[in-house]
Length: 380
Image (cartoon, rainbow, N blue to C red):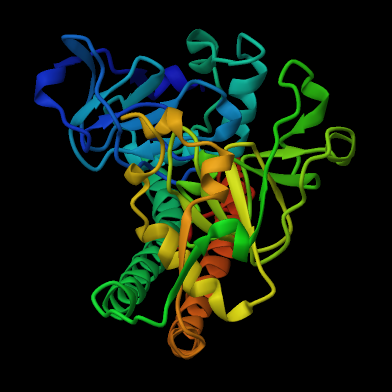
């Protein structure tokens, strides 16, 4: 059967005045690679916008290859470029979520999309996507199997968030609330080797890829969903693109900082990769300073940089390289490193486990949908 047989597009509206940055969803605050949502930065300048209810499935219809999808955990509103799906009676909403989270769905949406620079899925074609005809009982079993993996992923994320908060609390106590006259201040580029990423010409699509065998190319959007460490990206560059356009290759264990549009996102590379031009790379031979630098950049007040009220416009690579950096004493750095490094390692291990769980989920999902994995006899 087709997608339109089990669900429909929600066309309800809601007043923007009833929304806030936590209940409004747009393509900008939906995270890539099925990573959910983050807080919105602004609301639309219209009286009403599209509405959704708890349990509805939201899918970004711009650049489907970003795989932005979220099952609503609350009522709210969304932009017109976000599709809202709701099941018809007799079908499982959780099952629908995994139908739409299948990589095959995003591939199908891309093939039927319109436009080259900003491809949009064709809403009429999307509703013709093939859906397996399972009983409601089988639908719920499939959803439960996949949900158990997602629950473990979410638990690891919560553990990591708590661990990072603990490290930040110790950092603030040691380096902000506690003074030390022996600390020194310098320009960031006086201590670190700071490089900037690059974007090949978008009008030449041969440089870009969604093939994971190519080189990871990190965007600010990727940094919004990666956690403390970043190990993958939504888009990739070919080796030819890196050579021809002289794109900087970022080593493992490099601190990344976003400084355009969304300023102040920080992550540490888990592996070799590249980035776009909105991201700076901080490198040093001193391995004991990594945890301190991460916390310093996360806690830095970027509103103090730039000459206008709009730091998204004012901050550039020269300002980032010249930003003030407070260098603690060797003893302070070593003590903080001894405390924070094991916690950072635990966070990295949890993130790596999540990566394997995501790969497992995404590998068995199509097999469950095709019936290759038969769940009818499972007692769930």
